[in-house]
Amino acid sequence: MKKAHIIVDTCIWIEYFTGTSKIKEAITILINEHSSFLCGIVVYELFQGIKTPKKEKWSKAILRLSPI
Image 1: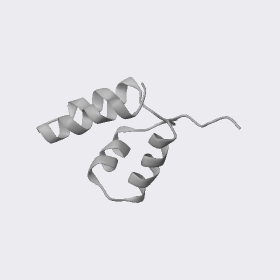
Image 2: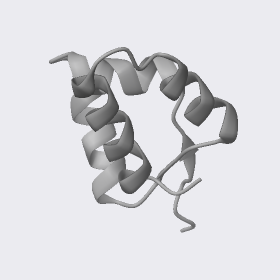
Image 3: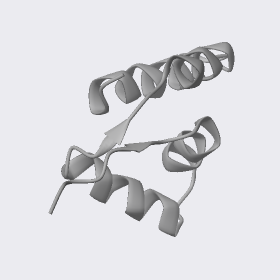
């Protein structure tokens, strides 16, 4: 069976880094299975939202977690 490749949208990444929901659990599984991916617009939107050093830190972490 072919492994799924899923592009994770901006709002889901924000929930992943700020929430404690089932979304966080699901994204963690995708990351661990190397199934989560980014696209250019998501990277752009995430970096547009950076207003604090904390947000900059988690935005950079996203780039390390998922290929573009």
